[in-house]
Structures are given as structure tokens and as C-alpha cells.
Length: 354
Image (tube, rainbow, N blue to C red):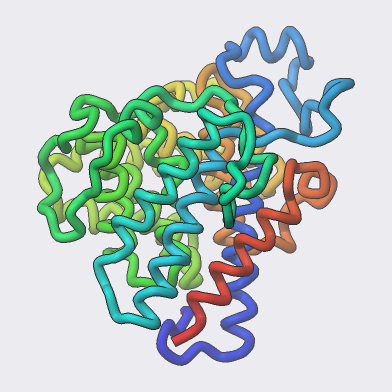
């Protein structure tokens, strides 16, 4: 297990590899799923063959596997958390993360509205490749149009004030970084859940985000995926209104235990448009297919939100195995791979500082 207070050189190297793996794995899954998001399973098979897609779909104009708002927002989550960690280290302001992550999402929103970086932009907002609108979620767009900053100490379990009925997967797919910052898993859970309320007010929408962050935190510590999910279920049980998220994760565990994974089994968990379904599909695919390549393909070859389920599955697999286990021929063709790696390394470097 990773010792957050006194990590060895070897443990620090493993931690850095898991952070890289989580962000790069998510980008691979995102890029795999993007061309077939909105397509039915029958449609995917009709176009790509009986096995569905078997790798990155690169057309004549696409020389890279493009990523979507899932990867974009995940990177801005990282930027906000890195800034918060740095500020707390220098100034001791422990509650700054909420405002800084919200401000980072505001910069992402600018990338969806502007043609390119403003003259005074810095950090991620200065990178032209991020100024691309690729089917962003309506709840993310409408939620961030409001300047709501969640209270880091607020009680969970009630509908939030922004998009109170929304439990789309847009809060889940961006929340892996909360589990990468070397905080305890219950802290990662709470931070991700409260930050999710920026755009998704339904308890299931933000509990699924919290559970995802906690699972990632446990994986970074060295737990197995099944063990991480079981421990996250115990965290969920502490909070009122957790039942939908808990039930979805238990279905994923039970289905994975049956063996013989298929896209048809994936679809019994839902389509992934809503939070608990996207998380359950990703967990199922990562558990049911021991080989990373096959797990990622299973996570996108279904009728539904293929890029989000692929991104979440990739986050989980990368956090578990590190970047060296990711399929190299896919990784080298993912959009902005080098830039994502720098973001990952900057976060890891900041989080190992005391």
C-alpha cells in the first residue's frame, strides 16, 4: 500500500506511473469511444464488423484519435486541484480547492465558447488544441453558466441547487483526479461529490462521481479493482440517498463474476448516459476483461455514451496498472498525448511535495 506520509523512491515512481496511467488511459478510452458515441450496437457492427471497433478509428482527415469533453474536463480538474495543492502548501488555505476547481471549469467553458486562447491565457487555457467543442454535456454547459461554488463542508444527500434533477454522467467522467491527489479515499469521495454539484444536483449524479474518485484513490494505494469497489460501497453506505449508485455497482460486480463478457451483457447495465450506469459499465468491463485492450474495447462497443464509459474504464485501468501497461500503438496516436503526460507529471510532482 502507498504510504502517503513517507513514500519510498519506488513507491513514488509507482504513484507517478499510476497518475500518468489514469489520465492517459482515460484519453485512450475517450478516443476509442468518440467515433461511435450515439451509435447503436447494431449500427457499430454493421459499419465496423461483427466485433465492432477493434482499435482507434482514424479517417482520412483525422491523423490522431481525438478526445472529447471527458478528457478536456478531466484535465481542467487536474489543473484546479494542482493549484489548490500548491496554494495550501504555501499558504495553508485548506478550503481553496472548491473555488479553484470551479474556476478551472470556467476556463474549460471558455474553450467551448471561444475560437482560440485569449491573449492573456495561461496554463491549459493557453493550449489551442483544447478549443474544440465535441458534444459537451448540456448539464455541464448550463451548470457552469452559473457561478455556484459548492461548500466544502456542506452535508450530502440532498439535491443540489444547480440542475437539481440531473444525474447525467458529466460529473463522473471528470472526477478521477480527485482520487489521484494522495488524500484519503473518503476525502476524495467528498471532494468529488461536492464538486459534482457545480453542474449535477441529483444525489446519484454526485454520489457516482464521489464513488469513482474513491475507487481511483484505492487503486492508487495498490488495492485490487474489486477490493476498491467494495471499499467504495462502504463509503456510499454512510450517505442518505446512495441506493441507486450502490445498486448499479453491485450489479456490475455480480455480472463480472459470471464471466464470459459480451456487449449484450454490457447493455443490461444501461447505456451510460446517466451517472451510475456509466460508472457501472466501466467497472464491469475493467473487471470482466483482464486484458486492458479487450476491456477498453468492451467498454465502448455498446449502444450509448461510448466515449464516457471508455474514458472512465481507461481511468480505472490506468490507475490500477500504470501507464506502461497501456496499449502503446493506441497511446501514441491519442490527441495531445505529450501535453496530457505533462499535466499528469505536474500533478504527481506537486502532490509528492510536503
